[in-house]
Structures are given as structure tokens and as C-alpha cells.
Length: 65
Image (cartoon, one colour):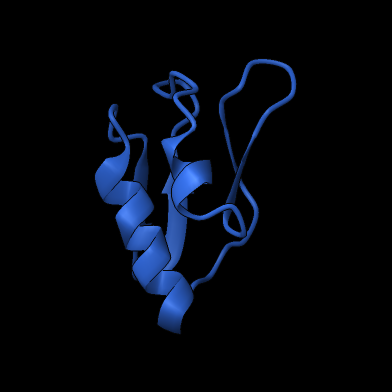
């Protein structure tokens, strides 16, 4: 699965980073999401799903491409 983000809708809540710091960070400039890895599998996929589900603005999504 691939992690996609839309930084235009990100409000910088940081929930993704708290849920999976190995997958997400926040921009030092505006606190918006920075995706650290492109593809996720296994345990990382489950943590990515948790972060996607916890995002208050639905900025994150997982795709199969």
C-alpha cells in the first residue's frame, strides 16, 4: 500500500506523527504532514491505517497503486 497526503487540507494536528513517527513527520515551516516512506506493508501498514483513521481532516489515505 502507498501513503498519500494532501498538505492543502492538513491542519498540523500531529496525530499521524504521534501514531506512527517512523512513517510521518511534521514540516518545520508550517507543521503540515511529511510522509517519510512511500510503501508500507506488515506492521507498518497497520500503524499507517491507525494514523489515517485518526487524521481529523482526512488528509491521509492509503492506495494500492
